[in-house]
Image 1 (tube, rainbow, N blue to C red):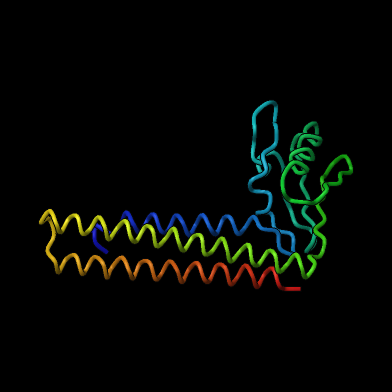
Image 2: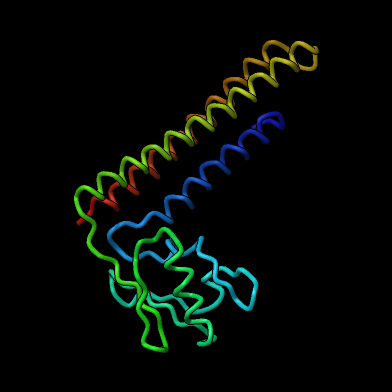
Length: 184
């Protein structure tokens, strides 16, 4: 890998990582603590990530349990969960908050897989745009006689290989998430 392609490879890698964290927040049939990653709780006036105000566990396949370290913020946690797009009503017994994940309907599963595919395609577009930016930058270097025509060709091949690898990674992520969603 040359110094010219490093920055573009990092950008592509960040795009793939962003997709991965986005897919983690999509609720499949099983309980997954990552669906709570974007939920912020008003903790004494400061928006705080939910995973920093209590212990999150999964005692059963369809159940997330949140045990706040400070019981006085129980209502704030419930309010934050209700305000999120999670679509699950929290219940609490005074000590812990429980989120029960219902079975996904076939219709909902199909809608989620379409959404996952769209996110994958959007990320592929971003990857290809990064490749195009790289190739444009390499052509400018060649035009300014900073690199030779052969070096330009070599850089174009290199960035194409990096692009292909990232597109393959995206396909794997999308396929794995869709398999997870469709698993009954």
